[in-house]
Image 1: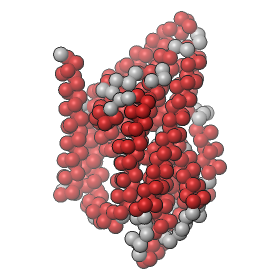
Image 2: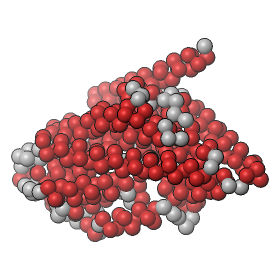
Image 3: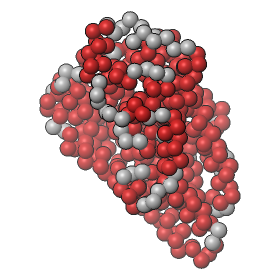
Image 4: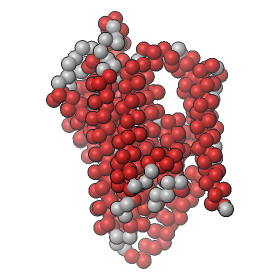
Length: 417
């Protein structure tokens, strides 16, 4: 009885969040200046979520490792998790390349005057970014694994070294037996307490999400950039959304069903709160607490898989970002009349995959990694301005796909534990 009531309340919460997003967009379109005043409420909700990220990641990863019992068992699920992340990211990139080559949104859609204006506006901006290379991002990936100051990494929400430390420390605890039972029990209890705190925050989610979306869309509308931007870059935006939709509604569901035999679309509904929160915050990390809560309580993924797979996925698994960057690079090439051959497009695929994985440790991640992809095939970085005006909106969709990919990965890896 209580279980049914609890499930009903959670379903209602998802409906409330969806309704708040729809209402927020309507308010932003018709009352943009009023909508901007909700900025503070949205920022408060975002900070509440971000406040929980570091403690939840540390305790959940440790709890997940401790739950495995024998640290030697980590090799199998850990290897599967990395293989899943790499495979889905590569698939996403090739979907993006296929869609952008079929639709060809950049061919003939942008006049020469606009191209020259964009190049002039972007010239001289972000100095030093052009020096970013594949070698630099590989070096960055290695350095991201460890830190010389855990407190500093926690303060900067630099999650990967915290995850590495948590895995190693918890793995060590599994070898020490009863003499560390007090520490292991404390970790499990802290993880449970933080998850309860997330449930409390989620009661505010409809209001917080309404404020977030209203303020951001209202600002775009009051600046005259929402409908104008969509009209100017409509075909490009449509291309990105088609690619993301194929990956979200065909590729990931097919993989999820193949390995788990779960209904993938029912799974999406179970993860609905997390997906809507991802759209609202445009941040996989900020959404992580909600993703973990939905995975355990609604999708019925084991805490062992959730605690280990989701924090790692929120850091390195960026299917939507990789697809977006590959699509954007080809779009810019089409717009300026560059003909990229098969080898160059394969270069884009490899670079977009690496750039998406390494994005978390780079300041102004999306812009810098996009520059890396452009540099890899000799596309002038000045024309990145062609996509910046709509980037904030498409970012919300690609983040949602990122979170869906992470969640599906947790369900798949759960089968190996």
